[in-house]
Amino acid sequence: MIIDFCILLIGLTLLLYSAEKMIVSADIIAKKYKLSPVLIGLTIVAFGTSAPEIVITLFAATKVVPATDAITGNIIGSNVANILLILGTSALFFNINLDKIGTKDIVYLIAISLYFSVLFYIGQAITLFHTIGFLILMLFYINFLRNYKSSNQEEDLKTFKSNTYLILVITFIGIFIGGKIFLDSSLNIFQALGVDEVLIGVFVLAVGTSLPELITVIISYLKKKGSIGIGNIIGSNIMNVLFVFLPGIVIVQMRGLEYSLKNIDIFHINILILVTLMIALMAVLKVQMKKIHSLFFLLSYFLYLGYSII
Image 1 (cartoon, one colour):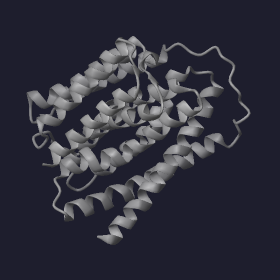
Image 2 (spheres, helix red, strand yellow):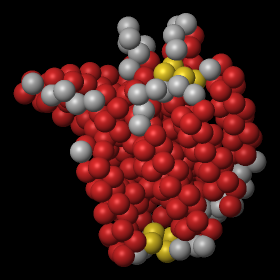
Image 3 (cartoon, rainbow, N blue to C red):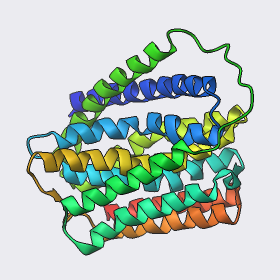
C-alpha cells in the first residue's frame, strides 16, 4: 500500500503540474484571439481544469468492468467541491465577486445540473433516450458559447510564442499519463481499505481533481483577473456533466453495457442540487462572497463529508 500511495502522489503531481501548464498555455492562446475573460474561464480554462476528470472518466469507462460508480461519484463530488470547497477556500483570501457571472451562464448551469440530477430520481440506469437529452443540451451550450460576446480589449501578446501550441499538446499527454496513474493507485488503496467506490469518487477523486480549479481561482485573483476564475468554476461544473460524464456514458453504452445509477445515494444528488441553486441565487443577487460566506461554505462541505463517511 505504501508503494501505491507513493505512485498516487507521483500521478497527482504530474496531473496538477500538467493541468496548470495547460491553463497557462490555453489562456495565452485565448488572449491571442481576444476572447472575454469570462469566456476564457467558461471554456478553455474550464476544459483545462476539467481535464483530470476527463482522463479519469475515460480510463474508468474502458475498464473490463466499468467503474461507473467512481465516474458518477467523481462528477458529483467535483461539482460540490468546486462550489463549497474551492469557492469557500478562495473567499478566505479574496472577496469573490459573483456579479461576474452572467444570467445565461446561470441558466445553463441550473438546466444542465438539474437534468443530470433528475435522472437519479426517475430510474436506476441511463438509457439511450437520456443520452440524447445530454447531447441536445451540449449542442445548445456550444451554440451559446459560439455567440458569446468577445472582448474588445487589446491583450499583451508578448508571452505568446510559436511553441505555445506544442506546450498545450504536451500538457495533454502529461494529464493523460498522470490521470491513469492517479486513478489506478487511488482505487487500489481505498479498495484495499474497504472504502465504498462511490465515496472514492465523491471525495478522493473529486477533491484531488478539483485542485486545478482552486489554483486557477487564486491565481486569477492575484493577477486581478477574477472573471477568469469565476467563469472557470461555472464552466467546470458544466464541462464535468457535458464533456466528462457524457463521454463516459457513451463509451459504456457503445460497449453494449448498462450505465447503472442504482448504487448512488440520492443524498449526494440532493446536496448537488442545493449548492447549485444556492450559488445561482447568490449570483443573481450579485452577492460578494466574504469571509463569513467562506466559513459557511467550508463548514457545510466538512459536514457533508462527515455525514457521508459516517
